[in-house]
Image (cartoon, rainbow, N blue to C red; front, side):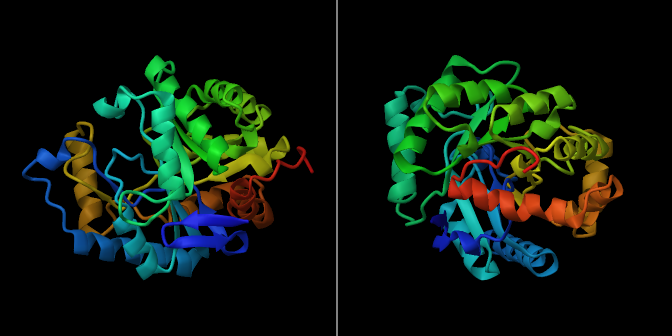
Length: 333
């Protein structure tokens, strides 16, 4: 069994410790028209390489999954260059974002079959003329409900998944609609264990998490460190509850962080927040480093009684099983 990375396919055994939902570069549509949005490509590549090397050398991370939607500045060629220079396995995805913040007009008019054709081509032949192949499919839905348009893109993802066998990684806005995504995947004939329902840690309700794991998918606690969306103490409490209830094999930990962003943020920030960002930038810590999960969140899990074996199994074993497409073990097994 092989996993497709931006530099080629690798054996499952080479996947190693994996962060399953991070980003290198993000660019929301329209930023390219901002004359103040200046992008230093060479400088960005050097910074990204430095940060990925730090992950590899200090924390043993071997693989980095960047499920950047097609329309959010995904640059497959740049991903490949960063992966080669950092000696990190980087997996990119095919697939679009959710309706409120994405889904380009042209693709909104396409049928599920036409959308799936694009996805399949990017997985089997490559993205544009880069030669880089996608190793997973990205799906995204908004809040409070999944729209009819988003449902069409979910249907396309199901077609592409069944044709290629690669797994699906999702975005859920505001930590809702994970179970509804599972229903759509089931209707589309995609096995639940081949889907990672993302950003579930944005929902503080353990009953919500139980619905997702009972649905048979992987559950993403993959916005660790984004405190404005959820305190990490809540994330840690809920993650430990899932482990203690026998669902350790379904949990994926990651941070949804980025190394670079074109232009201003995609939302207005307060003067206080901007001052905090400027202070971090002056220290070389903006955007925040990818190492936070290991330096800050792992100790929180230890304090709550998890062993290192339990913690690192979620970073080592679960991603390998997910990309292998293997069935989940029984709870508490």
